[in-house]
Image (tube, rainbow, N blue to C red):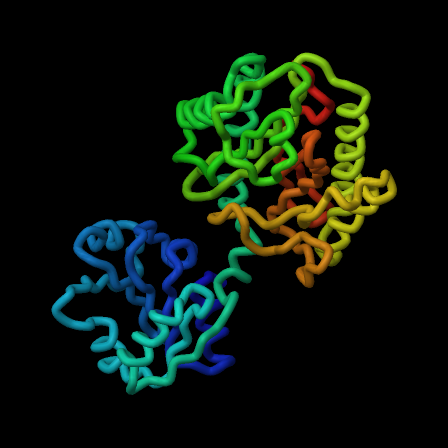
Length: 353
C-alpha cells in the first residue's frame, strides 16, 4: 500500500473529506515533489499539488500522478478547489501552523470544518522502504569517507571552522547534495557543548575534538559523531572516552524489532550512570533519521515509540563536563527483521591525532 493509499485509509477512519499537507518533506515523501513552496491537498479521489509558477513544471515532472494547479495572488485557488470538490471537513497539519496562520485559515475556509491533526505522515515516514535505506546508506558512506580524509588535517593550529568547511567541501566532492544539518565541530573545553557552533578557536595539544556531521543523498540524511584527541590523551581523556564507548556498545546490543525505543536509551544510560557520570549526559541517546535529520522514532528514556524493521536511528551517548570537555560517539543503525545493521563504518576506538 502506497503512502497516499495509507493516508486515504486514515482519512476514511476519522473521517474527513480531505487532508491538507503543508510540510515540504511530508509532501515530498507522499508525492515526490521536491519544491519548497506549495500545499498538497488529498481527497478520496483527488491528489492536487498547489504551487506557484516557479515550481509548476517541476511538480509536473516529479509527481506525474498528481494534478498540479498554479497559485496566483489574485485569487484563492485552494479555497475555490475545495468548494468545487464539495469538501466539508479538511484535516491539516497543526504542528506546522502558527497562530497567525491558523487565524487566516479559519477565515479562508469559513465554509469548511478544519481539523488539526498530528503525525499522520511522520508515522509513515518512520519506517523506511528499501530505497530510502539505500539513500541513507549512501549518505552515510560519504560521511565515513569524508571523516577518513579529514583525520590527517586535524592538528594544532587548525581552527574548528577550517575543519567544518573541509568536511563540507569533501562531502560535496564525494557526491553529497549538501549538508544534512549545520555541522558541530568543537574542541578543548568547548567540546562540552553538545551542539556547539564551530568558531575560529585553534586546536591545541590535549584537546578533545568532537565532530557531528552528515551528508545528504536524494534528500535523505546521514548523521554521525566521532571524538578524537589532539597530540596526547590523558588518563581522564581515556576514562571518559571508554565510558561513552561502552555505553554505546551496550545500547547497540539491545536493538531489535519489537522493543520499546526507550530500552536503547536505558541500556546506554545505565553504563554512564554506573560510572558516575550520569549528571553529564542530559540528552536522549538517539532519534530517527530520514528526510529530516531528527524525526520519528524518538529514542530517549521517555519515548513511547516501538522499534520496527525499517526504522533508521542514531545511537549517540555522550559525556559533557564543563571546563574540561566532552565526548560523543554516534552511529547510524537500521532496525532489521532479526536485529540491526550498523551503517557507520568509521572506527570507534579512541583516535589520537
